[in-house]
Amino acid sequence: MIKVEGLTKRYGRTVAVNNISFEVEKGQVVGFLGPNGAGKTTTMRVLTCFLPPTAGTASLAGYDVLEQPLEVKRRIGYLPETPPLYPEMEVGEYLTFVGRLKGVSRSDIARRVDEVEGLCAIGDMRDKLIGRLSKGYRQRVGLAQAIIHNPDVLILDEPTAGLDPKQIIETRELIKDLAKAGAHTIILSTHILPEVEQTCERVIIINKGEVVATDTVENLTHRLRGSESVAVEVESRDGKLDSAAAQRRLEQVAGVSRVVLKQSSDQRAAFEVESLQKAAIRGDLARAVVESGWNLNELRPLSLSLEEIFLELTGPPPMPSEASK
Amino acid sequence: MKNTWLIYRKELRSYFTSPIAYTIMALYALIFGLAFYIVLERFQQYASQAQMRGFPMSINEMIVAQVLGFMNQVGVFLIPMICMRLFAEEKRSGTIELLMTSPVRDIEVILGKWLAALALYAIILAVSAVNLTFLFTYGKPDWKPILVSYLGLLLQGGCLLAIGTFLSSLTRNQIIACVAGLCVSLVLFLLELFTAFKSGVVWKALGYISVVGHYEPFTKGVLDSKDVIFFLTATFFGLFLTARATESLRWRA
Image 1: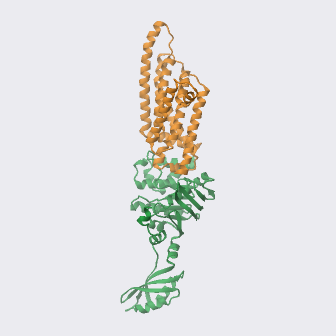
Image 2: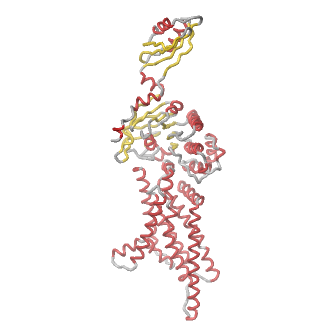
Image 3: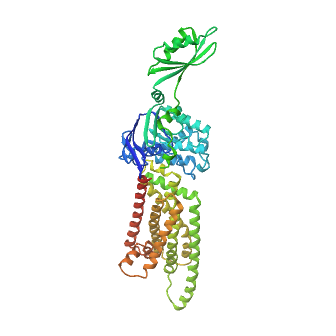
C-alpha cells in the first residue's frame, strides 16, 4: 500500500530524513517510533504530499507523491500533530467543509458527517464552536476530519500527545476500532512506547533520520534477545518439592540452554529458563513439569520491554560535549 | 471549480464570524459618510454662487467623482486589513496543512480566498453606496459614470487584494502581512503623488505602475481598456506570485 524508497529530506543543510526505505501492507497498523526530532513528522509530511522529498520516492497505492499528488491526497486521511481546526467554525460545519474538500459528494456528506461523529463520539458537539472545545474533543474532531472521506490510508502524527490518561485510552480504542474495521491502513507516530505495543502490529523505529529497525513487536523483542526466556514456577502436589530435582528435569528439556533458580520455598520453586536460538520450548517445558508429577503454576515468556529495545537501538543519549558541537 | 467555491464560502463566512468584516465596513462607511457630507456641503455653497453666475453644475463631476476618488485612496489603506489573514492565519494555526494535503490545487485555494476578499470589498462598497441614492432623490445624476466608477473601484480593489494575498502568503504573522501591505499602499500612493509633477521616461514608468493613478479615468465615466487591462494584469501578477509563494512553502517549509 505504501512504499518508501531511499527517501531523503533536507532542510537547507540539516538532514531531517536520510535515505529511509520501508513498506506497509494494506490493512496494517504500523507504529512509527522515535524520539522527538527523529524525522517522524517529516516522513509523514512527505507521504501526505505536504513536503516534496529531496531525494528518493514515496508512493501510495501505486501513485507517486510527486507525480500524482492529487490521487495520493484523495486516498489519505491525515491528522497532523496539531489538529488543523478552524476555531470560528462549528463542528458539523467544519466536518462538512473538510469532507467536501476531500471529495465526498454532496449527496453523501450528511451521512458521512453523521457516521464519523458517531465513531469519534462527538455527536453532542455538532453545533459547538470548535474554539470552545476541550483539547480532547479537538483531537477527536481532528480524527473525525481525517476519516471523513473514508481514506485507504490514515496517517496520524502523535494522536495522543497532550491528552489526559482517559482521553489517551479513548483515542487508542478509537484507533483500534478503525484498524479492526480493516479498511484502513494506519501509520501512527509516537514516542510513547506502550502505545505502539497496544495498537500496532508492526513497528518502524526511526532515529536521527534513519530507520534502525522495522519488524513486528514480538519479533523485535525476540531478535534482540536472540533467545527466548521463560519464567516457570513449579509446585509439588503434596508435601515438599525438591528444587534441585526440578531444575535438573528442566535442564533436560530439548532446546534449553540454561536454567536459573530464582526463588524456592518448601512447596514451590521459580525458575528462569533460557532457550537456545529460536528454539520453541514452552510446550516441552510444560509437559516435562506435568509428567514429573508437579503442578505448573506459571509459564510466562519474558519479553524485553519495548522500552529496553528502544534504548538499545537508539543508543545512549549523546554526551554533553557532543551535543554542544 | 467546486473547491474554489468551497474555500470561497468558508472564507467569506469566517470574515463575518470575526469582527474584522464589521470593523472595516463600519470604518469605511463612516469615512464615506463624512466625505460625502463635506463634499455635498461645499457643492451647495458653490451651487448658490454658480446659479447667480449661470454656470452649469454637474453632480457627477462635483460630488460623485470627488467622493469616490477620495474613497479609492482610503480603500488603498483599508485593503491590506482585509487580506492580511488569508494565508498568514492558516500558516500560524497549522490549518494550511489541511488545505495542502487535501486533493485541491493550490490555485483553487488562492482563487477562493481572493474571491472571498473581493466579495467582502464589494459588500463594503455596496453598503456605502447607499449614500449616493440620496443624490437620485434630490437631483438627476447620470448613473452610468457612477457604475463605471464602482467597476473601477472593484478592479483596483481586486488588484490590491491580489498583492495583499501574496504578502499574506509570505508570513505566518497577520500583523506583518498587514504592515507590509500598508507599506506597499503608501509607496503606490506616494508614487502617484510625486510622479504627477515629473516628466521623463523613468518617472512616467513609475507613474504607470502606481496602481492608484489608473483609477482616475473611471471616475469620469471613461472605461478605458488600457486601465482595465492594467488592473487585470496586475491582479493576475499578484495571484501568480501567491501561487509561487505557496509552492515554495512546500519546498522550504
